[in-house]
Length: 89
Image (cartoon, rainbow, N blue to C red; front, top):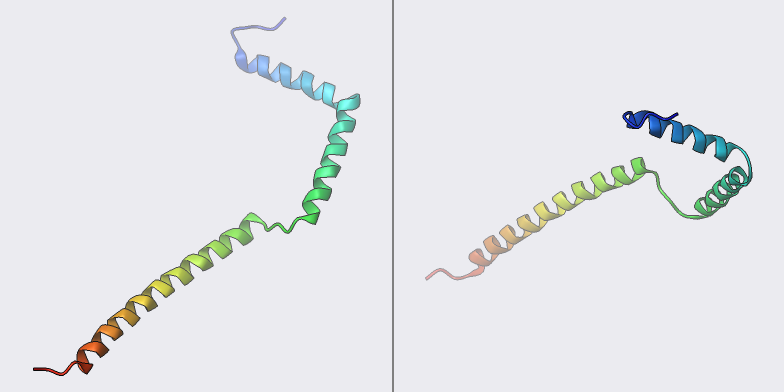
């Protein structure tokens, strides 16, 4: 008998029963076939790992900072150059 005052125990027993059902019968065959199908589909995709993504993200952020600094420097040089070219009254 399941004790309704202990929800953790209820979920544990439900999980055990579900695991038993999954290990026998057509559900297990379906699980194997689904895993094989997804593995095959993912192997054909051009995916990157989370680590590779994070490295590229950091590299892009660094490049963006450098580009912003260069754009600012160019603007400053253009202002300085324009002020030198103007004849002083």
